[in-house]
Image: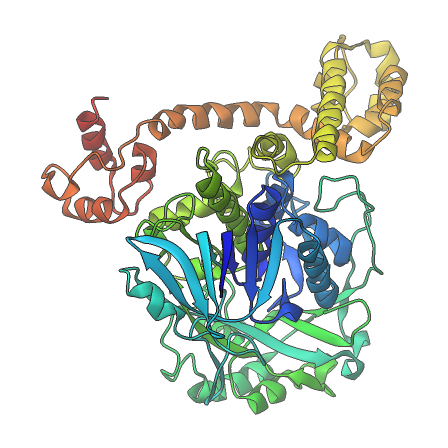
Length: 624
């Protein structure tokens, strides 16, 4: 028998969960197909969400009406803001989560989402008719018909796991790989390649000497991931710990390199440069005598611990021997060794910015299948793919985020324009407008867009409106309230800043580095009364207002630059030129432009190998 849906999502990892939830909430009849319903939203590697730039992506998902932020807040066992010593453009939230509770929270969410069904099975073949996907066939020989299909299969396509010379098929430890689907896709002209990632040993906490490590505590202030008015902490908050490798550790690892799949030719695929294995670290940095390791809990009650910084595919005995040279691990007992995994991915330059395939209509790709790494990058792609799959089913303008609107926009533009030569990971340095893409203002940037789509609830939208109004009241007061030296100088001296010689506006005082909204309010009663009018999310509102005051000039300057470059985004060129015949372009530019067929002049300018002089040629040909 056939099952019929608007949208089918294959794979229930972080991309698949967001895609299925979005499509269903927007009104599409949706089916999520997963190999194992007990592994929905599984955290395959570290049970942590966020980090530098990745935390901003989660806040953007939340602002648009996605779920990752809410589920992270529900299941966090430690929360911190990274990069506090730097400016707010660099601040990034990170949470350690309870792995099992995170997965179960996703399952509960999806099982209770209207329009969404879940089917446990493995997909073996796509049905493509006249260049358009129309359905799929599973290993149980069940046929599903669909208007759109979203592929979010993670590391499962022809997955191989490596521990030393031992090679096992699988998509994750103790989980089978998915076969046949790659071949079903590539027969339609879509190219693929292999990538590699890895994960560390898991340790029994009862065998650790915690007194020989430094502690890393979490924070317990108002910060969290979701902009919704939720409780900050649901679960018991736990510590993490830090320790270091040493020369003896490195010597054992170095002696084992001949048995390392990464160095003996056993693994040929592309690995992550930004999250290297421990064996790669000792080869790349031979003079470094130690590497920092972080020991992190896998859950609120489990003894299982994750050793961040010690990803490895060395033989198990070498991993254990090396780790036992670290004093805290001298009596270590493990649950399982670290391992590497190889899997198929598809060149993301074959996608549109909506994440729809250029080759097969209504087929979308999201997550690690596009050559990315990380739960957050996957979730952001899944949300965009799910939204656009719904739009393809029911009509409407494609939903695309610009590079000046969201890290998600930067991520997708990088993928479809530049492609990947290693697993793609988001960093703040990838965003040219990072002052505009701060963690504090994702709701201001994106919730209106989510509302227009239909993903943002009335409750969320009303919270945004009240927050915006409260921030504007504070800014208006600071801009217009005059301060006289006689009334404020004693307070300024107490706060360690220079007294006034003449009157000024309150905003000029707040702009001083020693001054914050809260500490100056103690010396300006009228301003204190203004702050006391804020009855909900007070700390969040004060932080947002203070950032807008102190960084106003930087924000305005970056917005001017973004607006100037938007002119190039408005010049559409997709399908207009036969690039191979334009001799005034460089040979590399002709090849790259023909392959990508960029949407706009701005996208063309970001293609590696396309020079400024090539862009000038395109501008002339476009009549600009």
